[in-house]
Image 1 (tube, rainbow, N blue to C red):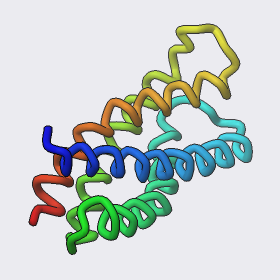
Image 2 (spheres, rainbow, N blue to C red; image 1 turned 180 degrees about the horizontal axis):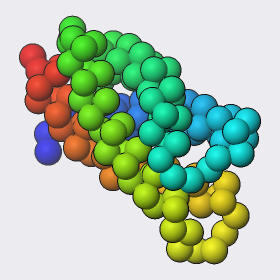
Image 3 (cartoon, rainbow, N blue to C red; image 1 turned 180 degrees about the vertical axis):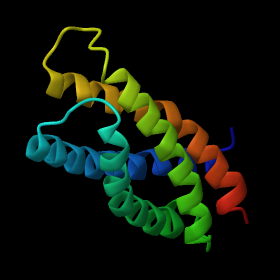
Length: 133
């Protein structure tokens, strides 16, 4: 990897981390309000969180990571596809508490696992398709 690519990946990961915190904050509020922590309700909850973190991620990645104009629709499409995969992983994993911990903790572990799984693929697609120079 070239230095520019490494720097971009690190910035993308930092911005992805901020998206992760936005998403977790929203998910935890929705879980707490509804009392629903597992299953396919997470597709709806992730959709709600997606609106907030996609706008955040697009702005910061356009301005700092890739420093070029990219289409929000293209960015949101990539992020949306990743979010669907995330929701599938989260929904299914949250149904099987493999560690026997509280459902709140297990749902957060499931969400973290889903986010990490799709993060690297999203970076590559954004770098080479959405924000290409």
